[in-house]
Every structure is written in C-alpha cells, then in structure tokens.
Image (cartoon, rainbow over all chains, first blue to last red; front, side, top):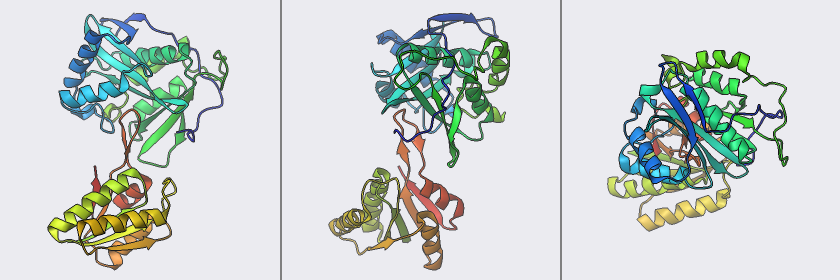
Length: 217
Length: 122
C-alpha cells in the first residue's frame, strides 16, 4: 500500500549482519541473514512451534506446525529479508521484512527463553542494516497501542507513528531517501552509541518480540 | 435469529456475506444485508448490492438487501437498535503481507458501540 506515511528524515545507518554480541545473560548471540538454508528453516519451525501463544500479535506467529510452515513459506522467499539471532544452533529470535508495494512490512519475535536480554534491539538493528544494504527504502509495522514498551523501542529506532486511528498503531521508517542509492545521515539519529544502553533498558520489557504484550508486565 | 450483516465491498465483507447467507439458509435466520459506504473498497455500492442479491438468490433465502448511506459504523449500530436486531455480522478484517490480522474501522466502531452481539467472520 502506497498511502502509508513515512518520516521525511532518513534513519541512521544500521549495522548489516553478520554481527555477534554477548547478551545480558552472558550468552554468545550471532545475528545472521537467512539465505535459504533448509536447516535454518527447520530451526525456525522449532522456535515458533515452542513459542508462547501469549506472545502472539495480530495472529502471528500462528499455532501448530502446519500453519507455522505455511506462514514461513510466505515470509522466507527471496523477495523477503530475514535475519535470525542464533545461540549456538538454536534460533533465539527472528525478524523479517516482507514486501508490500514499494515498502516492506516488519515483524520481530524473540523466543521466551531469550527475552529481556537485549537480543531484540540487536535483531531489529541487524534486520534494518540488512534491508539498508539491499536497497530497502521504506519500512512499516503495526503494533498494539497498549504495548508502550514496544512502541518506545520502535521510536528509539526512528519509527514515527503514521496512523493512530485504529486498535493498532501503524508506524513508518525511512531507511533511504526516495530513489537515492545511499542512506543520508539523519538529524535524529536516536540510535547512536550514547543512547544504546537506554534502548536496551526500554527494550528489556519489550523483548517478548516487540510484537507482544510484554510492555504491560 | 434476527441478523444484520453489514458489507462494504472489501474481501472480508464478501466472506461475511457468504457465510451469513449460508447460515441463514440452515438456521432460518431473519436476515437483512446492509450495503454500507466503505471508502477503502474498490467495489462500488451498486456492485455490492448486486453481489448480495445474487448470493441471497443462490442460497434461496428470503433476505432483504438494503443500501445504507452515511457513516457505516454508526448507521449499522443505529439500525440494529431501532429495528430490534439480535446480532450484527461483519467481515473479520484483512491480512497484511506479513500475515497480521487488521480489523477494519467499521468493525472497530461497531464492536465498541453495539448493544447487540457482534460476529466477525474469519
């Protein structure tokens, strides 16, 4: 849909994966793009099959292995951008950009076992870096309006609210200037290093997969 | 049961139409189909009326198809209240490319304002 709103300012540059870091539980986490590997897909099926239904948002992830596979079939193909947070060979989190006209829809999920450890912030930044490196210009998402912690994370990243009229807030982010090849510096680079701890702090409550209702806890 | 089905031409509204007409045929519902304005719909109200009448004919139910102009949510709630409907049926929202369900603005208004039961058809 092309009638969505996006900020005029171009967002910060995000680090393209692969990246690695130690989470707040001292686990070594690697963020890598999905490149069509069958084993990786199976690791995602496993993660989502074990996902707490309480952390679903607007019907995703769906329940049951069959529906999970159908859903992944729709969001993993080559025209989508996917990054996965790995703890060893276990998928800890997953974020995705799915094409929608001239923009991409974003979603991010962190498995319950890995929530509140700072993984979500790294994961969303990795996804946006991956998108930026591949020429993605505009990204949008919806989030339940009562999930204030998630909204606050998205705002720190640079998302701005584009539609506040319905149950869900719609937010947009501009990764590159329209039609331009490279991302310009932003006036509001909220995500710079000095703010990073603050992002993690807010996100400690969000991490349920910023989709989820963890902000209410 | 006395049922008011509101449709505006979106895909999910046609799904609600088909399901409600099928149910009416089995359950002998007293069904009224209200064709409302929906700015987001690419199908004109006249076409929506035609499709509703065709669905009713095909199912062989005696349902009224009525064109309702004005603000769709508030008109549906008003009609339900003044004419003694027991249930309002609406489309259950559309699915984003990601697979997220989004409820339409008409359904949101009706859910929050109707005194009757509201059914969203998935």
